[in-house]
Length: 512
Image 1 (tube, rainbow, N blue to C red):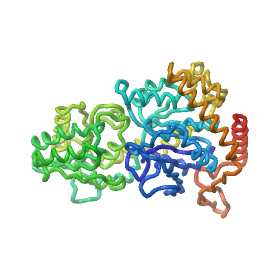
Image 2 (cartoon, helix red, strand yellow):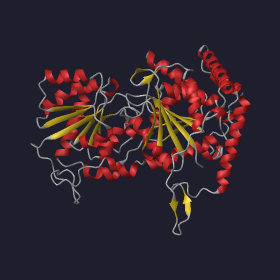
Image 3 (cartoon, rainbow, N blue to C red):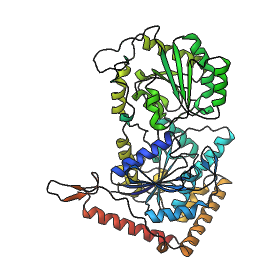
Image 4 (cartoon, rainbow, N blue to C red):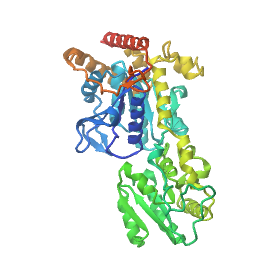
């Protein structure tokens, strides 16, 4: 059953990153499967208003003030009028927010529940429980996820972290990993000048003791990405291995410390700093190397190491967060997030490549079989079916915990109630003082919604036309649908969708 979906996050293109790529790829695949998807994010330099991307993907760049690392200033309620206008214009049915630190995501979930829309949240990060920033973030996350239909995490470690941070029932959290477009990260298999990658059978030739091995690092240069570890370990690695050089791409506040270390140790000839690179240039940088080094201190998934393995690089990474779940053991060399262990693990990787122990030319096809955005879209679509009632509760959760406390708060189909009193009960349980504050926010948000419905009625908002889709014809020239995935939708299913939309509009009217 096709849905109208709004993906909402502060982080999106043109800024590069794993969350940004995830939202774009997932949206594109959902469009291919017959759904309507729009993206709501804040304005970037030179990008304000509405932009259309490949495959008819519409992006709303809302001009809100950005305060830190592309995160908008939290105002709680000022986003509501704009959000409501977009949702009504696009006839949105499901609001899908991304990232714990995205202010637009947290606010959109609150406003969507007030408007009677189904909501999903995808968590891409890991957070602690002791420092002030994590405590505040966890409290806000608990507020947002107390009244949500379902949560998606990108790894099992991320799920455990999110369940603890937001006090969630594990049943309402699914694990759907990231993926890569393997065709965009191909090794140099047809390059006769690169003996590491070839199509001929048999083990790859050894890299001689005097051959140069290149280590690639592509990362945001922030503390949590392990830049301090890299700064400490890099000169020691180069001192122990004379025929090794580094290529480092990325930008961030730690870039100055990295440059100072290179100048202090006179390593300009052996370390190539590229600065920030576009996502479509990442593959061209990776295929210049033999080893990919990822010294991150915390990571929920680590899409970049999958991209590196797909390019035929042997991966050296820290054993933190969800990284051990991402790649099989023969593709990685793990290290503790410590300077000595990073140096030792890199040395083991260099030795393994020199003796021909690692078959890196096989990595691309193996990664291609493990990760697919089509599979991610299908699993996400199943979540949409579960929260909308298209799939029964027992079928969606496979009978697990059918009598649990969480399922007891849900209706016949296992979906959250939109009644204000039920929402206030869920918010009230967020804490002695925070619970009362969250209830007050929900009440004010509801009053703003009532005022908007009275003074800016839906009838005055023009409905946006859908992006025209390519028509497919059968052998006799008859139209069979607008896409390969929705061509078989019958009139009965279309009528069912209209009935559900009418029921939703009636429920929204009853909220006022």
